[in-house]
Length: 423
Figure 1: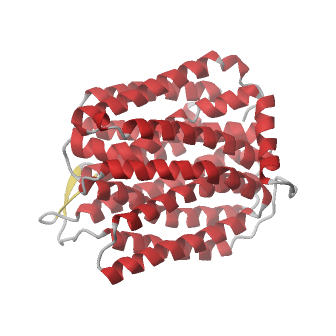
Figure 2: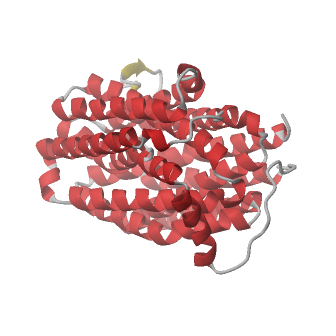
């Protein structure tokens, strides 16, 4: 495989920063849940998604126009400086105000909108087509392994130990030492330091492009319109790209917003359980990276995504009707498996059908529609009706209904998808 060293360095840098990012993005929702301030956090999440509507089109254009390695370098520097500044303010003032914590969450969330599309586009650019499936799976494996470590780290740092006992993966572990819970300031400071290490690794990357592309000029909207026009001319890809993102919509809402409320209000348990659920989610995602291509080797990609969407629809129905922690853990594992599995299959499909030259802009259209769905649901779930033990169950049921509708759309348009010639 060409550019193997570059790919490995990219994976390593992504893993290191991903662990600290993951801990922060688990800790911040729980921080607001502990403060009994979930509705304010919901508003923050809505604002972050609204900002994404403006930011995402620029992300796609940046990815298609500029050197993707340099984009990563600029991102790590900016992230390290901003989070480091917030942490320094927290140390100097003794504690961070809620709006500083919210700013870190919003910035990291917006960062994801550029980071992951750039990661996949860069991987496509430096990988031979016959390795797309393997590299996509490896990205998922390393990313979710980092998320597993983040979940374990968050479980340890959020709650510390109680009489030498630490809860990870739903199991109580006996330790010979005591771990004090970390403050949100300390967690953000650790996050900032990892960006510096990621920058050093990305700086070492040298590569030879496999997918050739030219630098385009013209206004932002002229260039973005190219991606939209391509999708309009390819209705099968357009419909598939929108509907196949439905599981991702539910995952972002539950992971960053509803999950903490579900754990605290519906299950009436601790932050260690919430962090452990993220650990189970990451483990499921890791299993998808290792095995999803083998599991569906005799099934075409659109059909495999239809099957996983159907399974996830059933899963949300079960979570709506139950209050058992062990079911929540199993559900988190299966949600991680289906979310990562559909992402791997979807990206391989899109790699094979969308030219690298317009990949960033075309997938930006999907992300914009995804954001609109998230804003709609978050605005709905901000109502007091969806808070408390019973209300949060109705929120999970609403997401299950949404998945059922997108499943129906995927099935109805199945004949329009490109099946032959896919990897």
